[in-house]
Amino acid sequence: MRVFPLACLAALAFLTGAMPGAQAKTLRFSGHDFVVRPAGVGGPGPNNWSARNAWVDEQGRLHLKLARRGGKWYAAEVYTRQRFGFGRYEFRIETNVDRLDRNVVLGLFHYPTSDVGPDATHEIDIEFARWGRRSGPVGNYTVWPADAALDYTTRRFRMPANAVRTTHVYHWSADKVVFTSWRGHGTDPGRTIARWRFVPRDAPARIAQQPMPLHINLWAYRGNPPSDGRDVEVIITSFSFTPELTGAADARKRVGLDHSSTPAAWLTRWNRLESPSGFPYIRAEHKARTRNQPSGIFSGKGYTLIEYKEARHDQDGGRIAGYAGPPARRGGAAARQTADAPARLYR
Image (cartoon, rainbow, N blue to C red):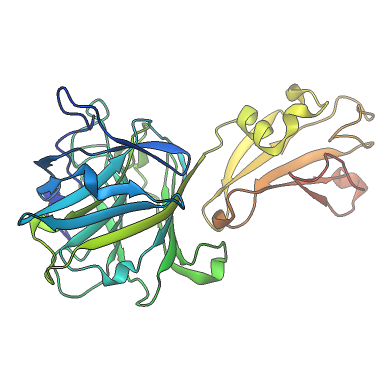
């Protein structure tokens, strides 16, 4: 069942952000350069857009505003020219989104460039909107298909009425997208508001497989102004992106093995698994060529590195733990070390 008309979901009339002969305004936010959508009229909505309605304050927070000037309402949008692919995207919001007017939409999403696909494909969205309705859940997780012949898939969720600081994440992989929202800007998994795992059988047709720019926007649904006639301002405290680990080289770099004396060739097999929180595990197995190895992370007679994995909760930013222990025939419990501890094997 559609929650809103297809043409109204994050449809953009432009992707470069620059008008002929004009230089686009840019903002530095959370270590990334964002282009501010310049003045003009276009989708979604359609809306009037204004570069004046987006700025970064002295604390480094991004502000977006939907405001009335001269009898017209103006929306705001920023986006990256850089394209981001598989990985973990985290947005920290400092606004009570449950109180957004029924005609207001806040979007945090990937959107395809023309070489990736047309509108209404490839998008991955976290949106806060009631789509003109007076009541109902304000949260929306949505995945648009890579195949234009298919329909989008969405999951609505309620936000707490009194939550000003909230964190929202989606982890985009080739075969799934995992969404999570929780109270506060910490990492406590016990404060979860909503979670949804989208794992379709036909993932290549249902989930985007190519990197895309990231967008953040605040706009009026169908171009209708806020029903209470008041300006709306939203604050995004921070944004972060953690690339997905894609192979042995990336994983060795992530856990600090590059400065180890252990030859990379000893890591012979890497398998991606999934943690309870949706963040990937990385498993590494190797067999030592002799019983006595050079000093380093694999030091110790008969020891084998059996696993590297991401920390259990995806909220904690991807801290990696290593487990090392003796071969099964020797018995004994595995010894644990973290990536930020000395590269030493404990008996």
